[in-house]
Length: 491
Image (cartoon, rainbow, N blue to C red; front, side, top):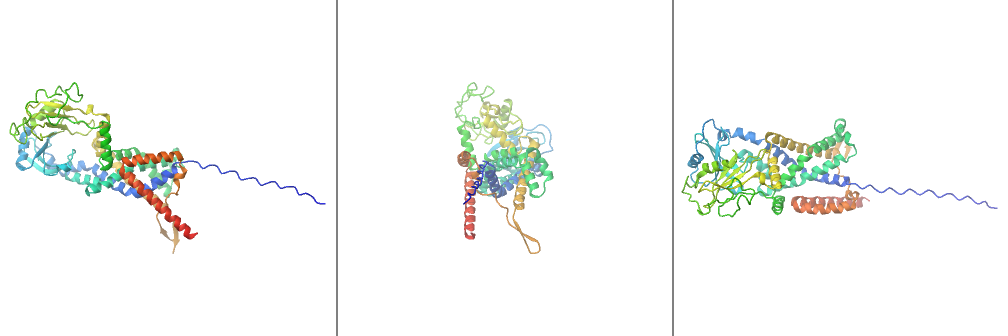
């Protein structure tokens, strides 16, 4: 007789693994890592040279005090006499513009074309406005009127003194700065520590954790400034800057300009908002057609001359810091442009008829399109002129902050390196490990598609960002393929 053995219950099935949570963090971490390691050297050079540029205005005033200042006090001689004094030391060069002394103790700049106006350079002859004595001559650059020392630092920051080829470095840095900054902020605020413990982690952590805490907290504090530097820096770049210019033109965000030639048609004051002071139309000045350079103050100052043009512009409300452009042809006007870039920005402009001395056109900054105003403010803030010394201090701080983040970023990479003991306890170091591959699989699929579309658009608008991103992806794929081959050989 047999006894049936009771059936054993089937072992319980393992519960299904929970679906893996979708997160952007691994992808952001890998992007931030590669961009930081490969782009950081460009950021470091741009940051340190930019910080140096921020302090050059004060240095310039000391180095070139003999040319920029005078001890003479009293009423200034007419501007045309100052121009004549400058002409005596430069008898052959064409005259371009004049910058009257803006305040007592400052000199007048009479600017000549010495063959470098295509690169925004002129030869400035400095004249004492009280005695009409020449105090020196120097090459000046751009609207800021930077003298040789500041120009040298500016070229270092912009192109490493390598011309248009060197400008690629600064455009690459500006293209990636906002990406690295925003990715870093996202990583800092989505990390394992909660927000209310962030600051305390800086004091309590040690080693790599402390380095990471300092890096993340500093980046978060200055992130807005970094994005601003990136956006404004791109407006000067070769390739992205051209796209910015085209966009502004297409959206009617361009900066308006006064009529620089009397043959150009323009509407009256009632029909064109930026024609001011009742001088919107030609006002009966269209018949004389051309201006004889021999009239008035001679070839350097045709017609009514620089002093009369300055007086007419100031009657329209233009301020002290101005540049007066000489008429470039027989039908051209004197263009008087405010060049004060401090807050509140004063960049009004007036066109003066050389024959009559009357203002025929005025452009007010208040009438600029908002985006043109925003571009003006952004550029001036980037150059450190918008808020004076405060602006310079902020730029200096941002430059040093970028340098500190580059150093701490590389230090984190070093601190996470794998090591192995050799000999008498010595250590052999290699570079730090990159974040795990396949990070894109953790992100939401729909988000990956949208991110790819955004990357294509942004990469087209910022060409160096798009090209370098493709290079990074190519390097990553090549490293992954090499690692896979090594694993197959050792299997």
